Length: 132
Length: 173
Image (cartoon, rainbow over all chains, first blue to last red; front, side, top):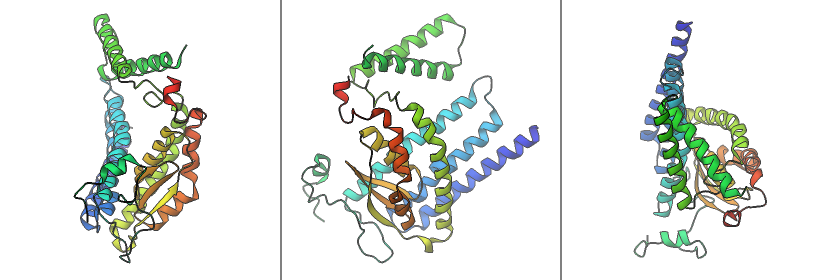
């Protein structure tokens, strides 16, 4: 039984490691900041998730509640990482970064900071010297 | 019982349960009391910061959210595999950015939808407006899947207990 648990947990940990490695390779390989963020989110979700799952199988719930803390780490990670990713992507776009496309053309949808009047947040983002 | 009291009580219960789980102290009455005091203090601070509303303490949507998570986790696994394939074969990468409709009526529901989009690798919500979300996708298919509306409907189901009080957190107390 202990052997089965060991094999399972190592499979999970190695799987998480593989996804984290792929995530790193993607960050190097992809063409622009937005596509690189897609690659980075691999480590946030399945990478971290599988490693924690594997550690959970090693630790069990445990007398000192290690398992509970591991689950809490995963839950907090899943709540906070999309917020950070969203903030980073929005900052990149509002700062004038244009997403890379295969044909080099503009994207179907975008936010034009200069034309927005109603949204106070976007008006704020319009830096006085931000003419690009 | 007013809504504020309900939110304060449920926040206290959640915080105290979290304190118990993190500390592992079950027997010492002094430590248990101190834990209760610190949880009560946190609730007091939340009340002073006017965080005790349906957004700060989303008790009413918790059950629906728990029912939504397994489906979301499965989507995350599928999306991970799709992005991993793109990393191994960068020729597949064909980014698109487009507006996707968001049918949720409350701010909380929209945030749940936007976070779900970002949490699944391959799609990032870049900008959120009332009724629509600007999404950047690594492959064009990511936008098509979102436009099909499966995730949108499921997020609308999560926020259903909030229907009718959308955007009026102050009136609700």
